[in-house]
Image (tube, rainbow, N blue to C red; front, side, top):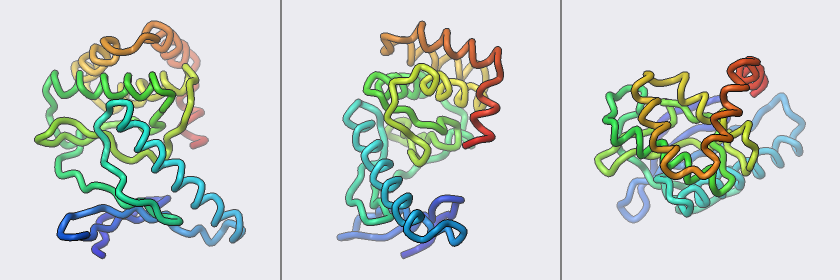
Length: 196
């Protein structure tokens, strides 16, 4: 296994299975947590993230396919492309990203970290990656936060196109945008980010 990256929650490895490249996300043990609590958290978060990815794909969003789920690991399709934060997306790509988010929200899936660092542009179109902070939620607040995080991480024009795509598929668009405007006024997103 070749180590690809390491974050606060997990390490990413690349492996080959029957000649096909896969990424493996392995949740790290936290030595400062009580062992049995740490084990349960890592197991439950791994299962939840894998389920979010599977359900997001079923909803119509492009996400890496889940090949297998281990105790603390997710074996997933390796996506080749460039992160949105390192790219100049087209209007069409941004509208597609907005539609994908709308599909997910319609099925009660929120990403939790919907930024340019967790969106990838490929020759097959955009992909959404890293559902580690995702949730199953119909909360207008959580949906609005996904949009706010996206807005804060990209240009005004790119965000306008993403929002256009979101509006084209979301039946609750006006409600979510209304909540988004409330959040901006009260600065709730700052508190949320600090507590995450």
